[in-house]
Amino acid sequence: GSLGTGYSHQWRNFGGTLGNADGVDQITDLLAGLKKDPNGRRHIVSAWNPQQNDGTPLPPCHIMQMYSVANGKLNSSFVMRSNDVYLGLPMNIVGYAFLNIAFAKLLGLEPGELIYFGHDAHLYSNQLDVAALQCTRAPRELPKLGFKKDFHTLDELLELTFDDVELTGYNPHPPMPKVD
Figure 1: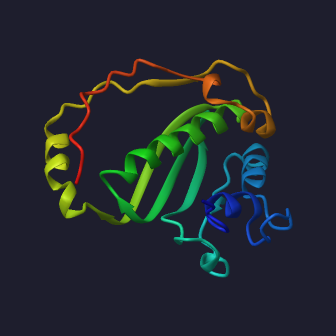
Figure 2: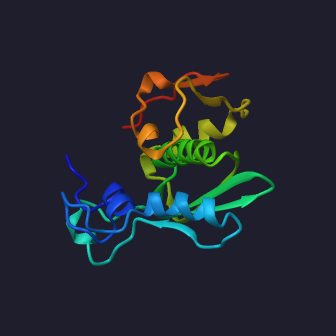
């Protein structure tokens, strides 16, 4: 299905109408702003638009992302208004880590820290046993994300396919039991 005026619409066409590029392209503005003023404190992308939240099946859960540059590294954070910690948060971390790495490459920076802010972070009752099991597992070294295909512009980044991305050093634990 479609998220309508949800996430990607607001990121690339904030306040605009569906199917038209008549809003604000926050991603283009973000990258331009980071190039022009890397020390700025206003490098923010918002998915929360009260005027258009009724145009999406579910108002955005991850509502804001923020970026800053320090010591040649691009640091980023994301804010969740509501967050399924067991199933949603891992995917959100992967997505925002990807953006941090890809945007850093576009800007000629190194990827820095990724920070998560959760407001209504929750576990559902049917997730408690698997979450407890997850807590018994020792963390392993994080894998490294890389790109097999070079890119220098946002358009070239958006043309990448799954085969253009590589993950090295991925050493997962055995799969978790399914949640009822």
